[in-house]
Amino acid sequence: MDTDLTEDIQNFLVTYNTETPYGYSQPPYPAQYSGEYYTEGSYAESEYTAGPQYTAAPTVTSEATTMQSTTPRSCFGGSCVSRPSTHMTTPDDVVVAPPSVVGLHYTFQDQGAGGSLAPNQVLWCEHSRLLGCPQVFRLDEEHEWIEHHLDHFGGNPPQNVICWFCDTIAFASENPRDASANFRDRMEHIRGHIFHDHYTSEFMRVDFHVVQHLYALGRLGSEAYQHAMLINETPDRFRLPSERSGSSSSSSSNQPSSQRIRGYAHDLDKERRLERARRKEAKAARTR
Image (cartoon, rainbow, N blue to C red; front, side, top):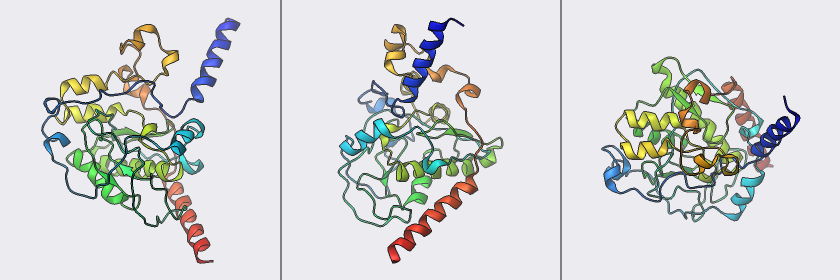
């Protein structure tokens, strides 16, 4: 291979791997969709109104902004998880700015390793932009948070999903009956990123599986679906001129799912054991 070409490829990989986790250089969704773009079952139809809600500022804190440039693209706690089930993830269609989030005021003790939580550590709805859902949960409301997401799918989550933040895990289930369990594993993993890595919605990637699944369920209008599927994860400076103008020719959404779902098998039980160990250490430290 030509030496110059080899160097160019190596430089690209080095630069790309140091990019902030899925920090898009352009807004992934239009600033606002009117009600006509939402189909029955979306938040615009006011289906999801119960549960705790908190007021969130639409911007991220300076601390989180700093983290965006320094946090490694890896799984939390040094370990990742995967299990053979199948689900999907969704992108976003902005009506409500997702809780990326600073203006939350509450006090509670998380049962994880950190003890006291930073006020910007919350569990937001994955569909905050795509479906305009404003629901926000505390870190100790993991069960309610997961059930809320399952409700968006009518209890029928996709069989294939990926992590919002890291690209090393594929959550997939061959049997549709395993989809819910697989989806729960994925959400537990995501919560670990939010708690341990302090990720906010600014770090989120698009999961085209979820976009397609919501559209198939009739929860997402065709125009919103088409726009979401055009999102390109390639950093702006590495795109061709046609891609910068909005062409989807190289968008990851056009890749076969077998190429987009990439990752390694990880031990979920091991990750849970590590989490329990961290909690015990934190509890012991507090009682000293």
